[in-house]
Amino acid sequence: MAESPYHPPRNLPPGGSVDSWVRAQVTPFAVFIGLTLLLQLFTTYFGWKHPSAPWWRNWPEQWLYPLQTIVGLVLVIRWWKYYEFRWSLKWSLIGAVFGAVGIGFWLLPTIMYERLGLSGEAEGWLKWLGLAEREKGFNPAEAFGAGTPAYWAALVMRFLRAVVVVALVEEIFWRSFLMRFVKDWEGDYWKRPFGEASWKSYAIVTLLFMLAHGKVDYAGAFVYGSLTYLLCIWSRNLSACVVMHAVANLLMGLFAVIHGKYGLW
Image 1: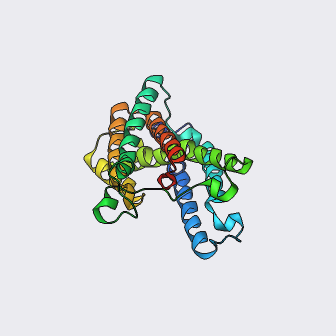
Image 2: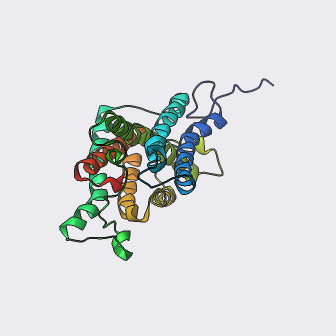
Image 3: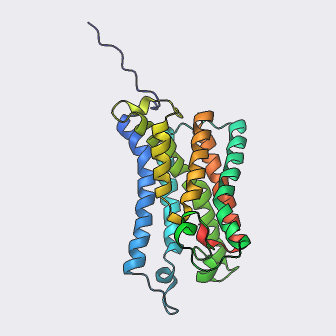
């Protein structure tokens, strides 16, 4: 009896393997998180908050974030053929609207913090709701001086990281891989179509998305993650989710820089 012709599983490009598909979905995110942990370790053991400290020890994020950006882009480009991007003007515009609404909810607690006349470090339920001033964070002006060439280079790389790399790396992992994996982890999850509705996938992925952020961002991350899930199952379009994330991070970055809320990013 002649053997049946081999048909590659759904979602794999010609000549692609399941192992390569999994690596493409997971590796960029894992490396990105690994570099974030490296920043924490470097800050703990080699960082030096002192006027005499060189900038790379006083503000290690100023060199590690660009490194994350470059490495993330290289990895995504390396496995580009494994990603199911279906760019569409309609879904890109809808994704942009979702991103603006989602980040609006994320920023609302910080705005309310000032409107309510609160001050100081948020504690207890205020922190869980995200009511904090969010002024301490990534600020290249502290390291290089406002308006200098190094300042603008750092700021451009920070926006490239947030708007392009984070949007791609996270949506590929959370929506393209993890939603499928959670829904059918004992089966051929890579064959499942993108954006299948599942309460289990929604609950687990949204919870993990929240836990990937600080407590002060839990409320915003829950609302944002829920809206992204809704867009995902409605559009069945990974590109729409990437656009949503990119627009949200762009607006957050602009808000942080304009209003001095550097702790937001």
